[in-house]
Amino acid sequence: MNRPIDHMQLTMAPMEGITRYIFRNAHAAVFGGFDRYYTPFLSPNLHHHFRHRESDDINPANNAGLDVVPQILSNVPDDFLWAAEECADRGYTEVNLNLGCPAGTVAKKGKASGMLLDLDRLQAFLDSVFAYSPLPVSIKTRLGWADPAEFDAILALYEQYPVKELIVHARVREEYYKGYAHRDAYLRAAAKTTLPIGYNGDIFAPADADSLAQEAPQTTQIMIGRGILADPALPRKIRGGGPMRSEELREYYSRIRDGYCAVMTNDTHILYKLKELWIYLLPLFPEEKKLTKALKKSKTLAEFDQIVPLLIEALPEQR
Ligand SMILES: Cc1cc2nc3c(=O)[nH]c(=O)nc-3n(C[C@H](O)[C@H](O)[C@H](O)COP(=O)(O)O)c2cc1C
Image (cartoon, rainbow, N blue to C red; front, side):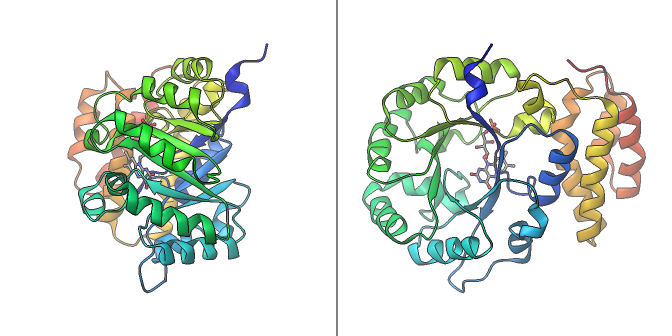
């Protein structure tokens, strides 16, 4: 029997510091289940060159076989258009505009979610972007700055443009990632908008995705972020596949670890990145209090490398 979710794309959310190409490739090789991947934001500056990690992330050789959409964070039309041109030159077919990042360093400068505070300025920016972008532009947005009711005016503005797809992280900026996503606000927007619309926020289990798909069958994509960090098999499970097995976790993790070691030279930085990943995975091991504590306290990569295999070995059977 066809389910509403069978008609929707499942996409990997951009997560700065985590979901760059090494992570994307490891996840795709071991678990799969995603139709499309969004890069963490590229932040073009006025000098018009990408940082190394940004150009590596959109290097087509690092993304072979994956449907990848580069995300751009900028409030300067010229800079956005330069980055979009660079993406077009590399063969990408769409770019995504970040209107959601809540970080003070970004938002307080009137970028990303900060653009939702001044709709006249946002309109001027979108006028240029949609007039001159060499590629179709999708938008990832929050509902507003402080109150979900702001989204009525924001959505009306987006509807003036040929937005390729509007992906809504159903929180306002002041909520950062706390509390629950406002699904109700998303459902209201999905019911009335003329734009292709996708959902993002708090999809942690197949039932979360199924219920969303049933409540808003017009949804074009369901984007998942922290849910796959906590359970990398989640997209596969949503598609009817099986739960994660410990040998898969081992393979997935070793691809990520080896990938970082191949491109980073400082063990402390590698440790920091791997720890960040494991903070999301640790709830899989509720009984392993000692190992969990040791992993969190580990100070060197060598120490960390001794603990991880013990944890993976101890992975309880997943559902
Ligand atoms: C560590 C971290 C980094 C993130 N980086 C980005 C980013 O670069 N671009 C973006 O649009 N959203 C970013 N987000 C937001 C996620 O894409 C997503 O909207 C958010 O986590 C809510 O979805 P979830 O409940 O499925 O995690 C980030 C979130 C986290 C936790």
